[in-house]
Each structure stands twice: as C-alpha cells, then as structure tokens.
Length: 90
Image (cartoon, rainbow, N blue to C red; front, side, top):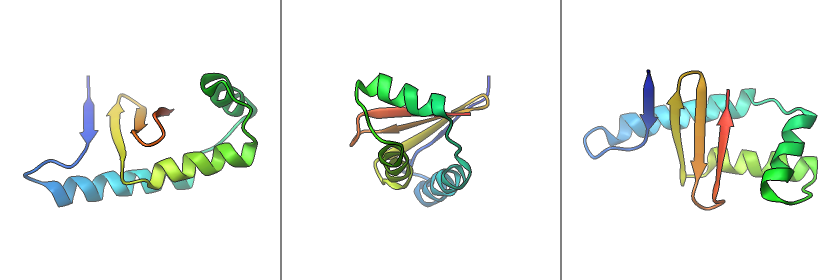
C-alpha cells in the first residue's frame, strides 16, 4: 500500500511544507461539490449549513496552517485541528 504523509519533518521541513501546500492548493482549485456532499457535511456535523457556508469552511480548511494531509491510495485525508474535522477527497 502506498501511504504518503505530507507533514513537516525536522530534517526536510521546507520541502515537505512546500509539497503539502502545493497539494492542498491543487485540491482547492479542483474540488467539486455535489448535493450529496452538502447533505453528508450537514449530517456529519449535525447542522444545517448553507452551501456557501460549507464551501467557505472547506476553503478555509484547505488554506489553514493547522491542516495536515495524508494520501492513502487515491484518497487524500485532510485533517484540521482548529475545525475538529477530517475531509476525505478522492
């Protein structure tokens, strides 16, 4: 299994950080939303967020310095400790 973790390490901090930021930027530019996505977000958060609120939150998560990124297979697992959420992008 091909697992890649994009977090800063003490040895290659700038390279890992740059790669993580570049990947998050690419994801942010290409992320697509469907009605099912909005429904799942609201169900998981037990909330009734508007479409614009969900898109704003995802955008903020993808640009937040507290966001970590892990790739497992074709999926990216994006975790943010400020929002207490994990996004799965495929």
